[in-house]
Image 1 (cartoon, rainbow, N blue to C red):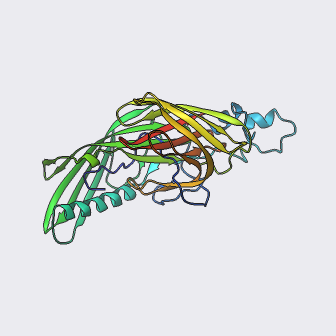
Image 2 (image 1 turned 30 degrees about the vertical axis):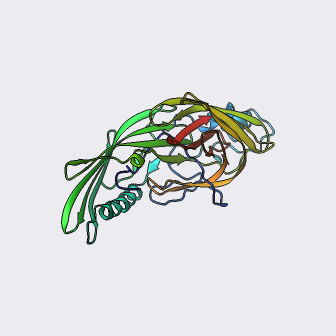
Image 3 (image 1 turned 135 degrees about the vertical axis):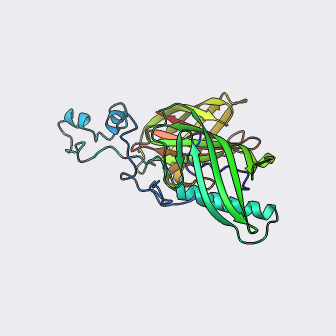
Amino acid sequence: MSLQKISAATIIALSLAACSSGSDSPNSTLPNTNPTVTNPSNGNQTNNGNAAAANNQNNPASNGNTAANNGNNPTNSGNTAINNPPPRVDFSVSYEGIKNTANKDIRELAQEKKIKGEVILKSYKVNLGNQSSSGNNFNLSSIPLKTLDSQNYRETVVAQAGGQNHTITRNGVAHIYRQNYSLIAGITPTGLTINGESEKLDADDDDTNILIKGYATQNLPTAGKFDYSGIASDGDKKGKLAYSVDFDSRKGSGKITGLDSDIHLNEAEIKKMSYTNKETDGTTIKGHGIEGSSNRGNYRLGFFGPNAEEIVGTVDDRNNGEIGFAGSR
């Protein structure tokens, strides 16, 4: 990615791109500075507004591990809310991770500009909406639930190259969508300046970068068919997602509407998967997901929540870059 591609630091259109093919190891970890995530102990879900207990009461596939359910079940094994507290979800974005991505981009830019000598990053600052950081992680837990939220994004870098200091500013718009257990964000680049002079973005440099955060499902339901509904976004337009998963056959399929022509997400099987936020903060999510084909390009999604209450994913559109989507049941 050239420097002209904005590193989707803490954002994006939402818990999207959930799981990519790869890892056999389970678990989702999204810590602040560690690229992998652990499950129940990550983050803090007090800001989500909907505790897992409430979700389980409305979920026919719930495992019943809530105070309300246990109180109504005389044969319950005694797993109270104290013994099984709601999972804490980490929606933070690693400052060091996005800084490292920017450092890599700056070195690539220096090569493109044929600047010789060592490249040294001297300072790095990120602004997202009303948050600003020169060293602390970003917290996206305050993003409104199930609302496609748009915020301005800016990176300001001072780097030494060729014996001189250069100030580089990258601007963009972050589209963020948060659910109870997952978040997907997409940053669309809008501008680049070097020492105050505007640089033209190449055609390949205006693609939306995707960031996904959340509590990845580790133990999937073993039976039942569930319908997920939610949103999809290509950075310009908002569409609708409808996706069905049959946990008996361990397969899923669906459709996205409202983004030009309909996108048919063809049936594919559930498997263990992992997803790395390569273009943003470098963190990795491990869990279960589905990877399949569509009429617009391949898609992939991951399951989030203790009982797979949510999905987040992306479509690799052949013509328009990545499309993010997220839904809940």
